[in-house]
Amino acid sequence: MLGKGGVGKSTVAAALALSTARAGGRALVVEVAGQQRLSQLFSAARVGDDEATELRPGLFGISIDAERATEEYLAGQLKIRPLVELLTHSKAFHTFAAAAPGLPELVTIGKIWSMAIALRPDGGAPVWDTVTVDCPATGHGIALLETAGNIEELAAGGPIRDQAARIQEVVSHPAATGIVIVARPQELAVAEAIEATATLRGHGLPVAAAVLNGVHPARFSASDAPPLRAVADAPGAVGEAARAALRHLEQQGDDTAYRTRLAGETGLPVIDLPRVVRRRIDLPALELLADALAQGLASAGAAA
Ligand SMILES: Nc1ncnc2c1ncn2[C@@H]1O[C@H](COP(=O)(O)OP(=O)(O)O)[C@@H](O)[C@H]1O
Ligand SMILES: [Mg+2]
Image (cartoon, rainbow, N blue to C red; front, side, top):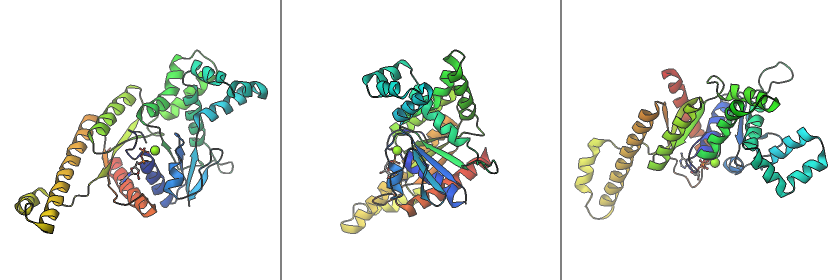
């Protein structure tokens, strides 16, 4: 899930995982920016960063803190604890991280990669049927997805480059990875989604679909407009209802225009998710979104 802040990446990631879990699969959602949105969405305990936390039957969450993961990685590499502590508990760590650009991103994507390819010790089946990554907002999300490819290209030979190449093989393979771009039916979000798609493709990364999140349900049609307009100035409740209906009709029209633009400029299948009118997204709302998403992905897959 990639897109502008607030467009619904975490919500859509949770809904996608829920659709896997409800179909009997094992789904993992990886929260990268550490916002603890998952525990909010499922009214569950804090999602841990060591082990996956089961949030619903078959649906697990894990949170990756890039800085901590990098410290752990360095600790594993250095094997000299006091040195690691010296490094991480001082400003030196930040200097070090800055001197090794892309290292926190590489460690983060490496952790995700190792979970995505993990096999069960018994039969060798994958541990997870789906791994959904709730990426940080657009720029940071793209950096995360690009890092393995950049390091593979730029680093001189050596273990880090080899590791980056193994990660990149999975991240860039359309059978293994499908990047889902999330947008709201709004100018900035749609423009950012179109730009992100082009950037990711430029780096050879597989963008699978776009989600237009928060679409107004199709309640009226264009032929309703004239009779609604005729009573829009009527006093009291009738006029008020007619004006609300006209506003809704206008929003439906805007949604359609944004969908057309997003589909036209990216060539991606666009999946509509309805705007849920609730104080907060609860489990029934997530289930509704999960169903809409599963249906949309199925028809996108059929069309592909
Ligand atoms: N389909 C939807 N209908 C209504 N509200 C939504 C929908 N999707 C997301 N939201 C709300 O929008 C806000 C931002 O969603 P969130 O998933 O946290 O976005 P992001 O992860 O992209 O920052 C939250 O308050 C969430 O409940
Ligand atoms: Mg989020």
